[in-house]
Amino acid sequence: MKSIFDTEAYEELMARADKLTPDSPRGWGKMSAAQMAWHCQYPLQLAVTNKKTKVNGKFFLARWFFKKSLYNDRPWRKNLPTAPQLVAREEKDFTTEIEKLKALITDCHEVKTRETWNPHPFFGTFTKDQWGQLEYKHLDHHFKQFGV
Image (cartoon, rainbow, N blue to C red; front, side):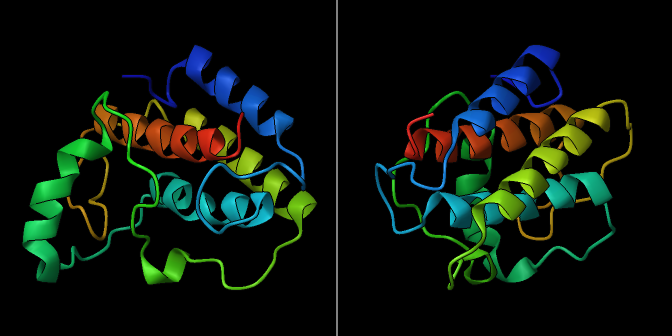
């Protein structure tokens, strides 16, 4: 499984981000390219900031069922549900959001030497390798959504 922490995968993600345009057609879902760029920022921020958060124990079964799919080699299916706070409800400025996304991709790649990783607020504990794979897989899923 590719990881955002691997230089080759990082460079690939940056090149794919550069191919996105405001008019990139989506293959599925409802988001525009600008909304997708906004949507992809929060998971990267979680990894970069590494804030200590409480794991929401309310969804134990969902977490247990889906967690391994977050960082394995199998692609995610289209139109998966999204956490309500990550749904872009209004249009976003493409240039602003893609620049923020690219900066976060770089920031995330640069924390690859960190040894201590706090839990994800929903999915709980990940190893460093799993964090890198999760971040790559999420971006790959959405970049494929927009044909890049």
